[in-house]
Length: 102
Image 1: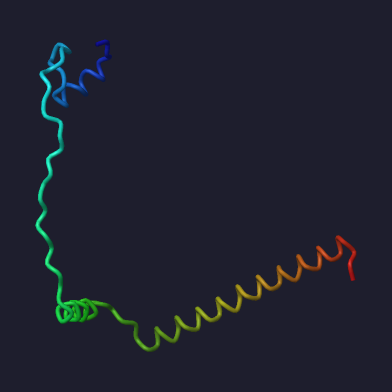
Image 2 (image 1 turned 90 degrees about the horizontal axis):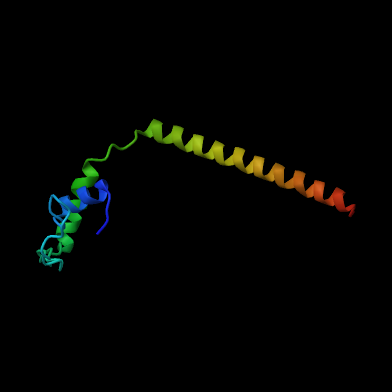
């Protein structure tokens, strides 16, 4: 079998060829099926307990931070809506003038 150095090194690492490039006796190539332990399901009570413990770790915003974030979101919505509405009107007028329809 003709192969270059890189192929030979790769096959040697895999254990398919010997140092001189001769094929090694075949080996069992069937994948082994490992039996994974079956996960136990969490009870509804345990689930609620885990959710509550995770929510205790959350850093909740203060009231002033919440108000500031809400104002920023509302202003952003208004600005983006105005930009999209303006562009819609502008392109609508351009198309109407292009086709000269009144």
